[in-house]
Length: 225
Image (tube, rainbow, N blue to C red; front, top):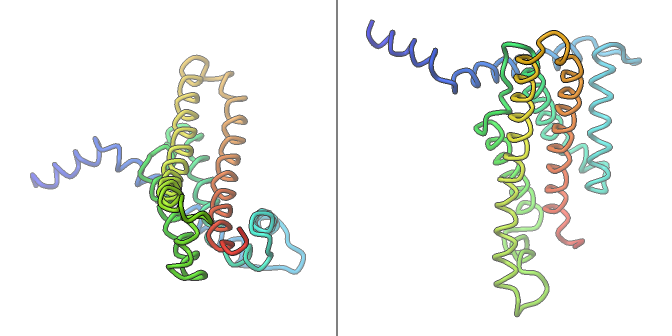
């Protein structure tokens, strides 16, 4: 009984549990949208299927511009589109009063950034080979190779910080902004704030997806640089 009470107090007091709970809701929302959009596929898409297909076409177009190849854009579509869905719903759920954005927690944004970091290096190594891939870090000048290699390593690790802290900082700031608006004028001021925060949620999702494609392009197109 004592352990049960301690666990109950932990759930009530732990803010980490709140983020985990809201992320579970986000995951359920993503799965439900995917299921509903694909359950009754039609040749002429309607409703949710039309929206999801338009979204996927937009992601493919984004990848085509970044990678220069329709095949590569479609190859990485599952990863990038899933990240986009997760980031978007994680951002938007915080706009609903009483809910918190999982993306306002560094735990989630850092996890997503690490997934992207590991995956694009894996793809680069798989395509180019370990030696050839990391030789690219040294640059063409053999004299400056050690320095350039160190700079490249620091640059790549800084991408983890850039991806995670950009999303975390923006969404955390948006949540605080909405909280202030609700406190000062709970019936009038939040209306334009909701619209602004929805736009920001879409924008942050777009930025995360675009940077994922850009990093993949840099990893799999080493020979062209």
